[in-house]
Image (tube, one colour):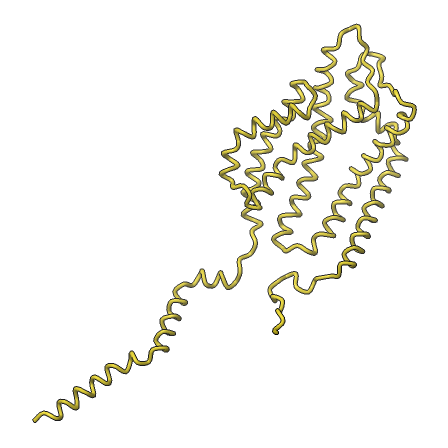
Length: 304
C-alpha cells in the first residue's frame, strides 16, 4: 500500500505536534495570563487601592444623590468584599491585552494565512468594541439614567442604595453594553462563514431595528433613556457590520488551488490538447486517402 504524501504546498505541513505538547503549551500560556492579572492586581492594590476604585465606579450615582446621601452596606463583609471584587475586575480588564495575546499565540500556529487575516482583526476589534461599550455606558448612560430615576423620587424619600446591589447593577449594564457593541463582529462572522449573504443582511435591517428595541427593553432598567441609549447604537453598529462584512469577505478569501486556476484560465490549451490526442489515437483516419489513391491508379493502368 502506498502511503499518502503531504501536500508540498500546504503551509502547515510538518508543524504537527503531539497532544501532550499542546497541553504543555496551554499550561504555559495560562500561567502567563494569570501572572499578568496578578501583577495588574498588585499594582492596583498599591495605587489607587480598592476603596478609591469603588469610589470611582460609584461616582456617576453619587453625583445625582441628594445632598449628604451616600451608599450603604447592609452586609457585614460588604465593605471588604465589594471593593475586592472591583479590584479583581479592574485587574482583569487591565491585563486583557496580555490575556488575548496568549490566546492568540496558542491558536495562531494552527491557522492558515488567510485564516489569520480574519481571526486577528476580529480579536482586536471585538476587544476594542467591548471597551467602547463599557466606556459609553459609564460616561454617558449612567449619568442620564441616574438623573432620570432621581427626578421621579418623592421628596419624602432619601435614596441610599446598597453597594452590593449597585455593583450587580453596574456589572450587568457593563456586560449588556459591551456585548451590544459586538454586533458588527457577529454580522461579519455570519457573512464570512456564508451563513447569511449581504443582501439578506440588508433586507433584515428593518427587523433588526425592532429586535434591538426588544433586547434593550429586556436587558436595561425600565426607563426610556437607557433603552434608547442601547437600541440606537445597536442599529448604527448593524450598519457598520454590513459595511465591514463586505470588506472582510474581499480580503480574507482562501487562495484558489493552482490546478483549478490553470484549467480555468486557459481553456483553449485544453481543447487543443484533447484534439491532438484524438488524432494520435485514430491512425486509420489518415490512411484512407492513400489507399483510395492507389486503387484509382491501378484501375487506370489496367484500361487500354
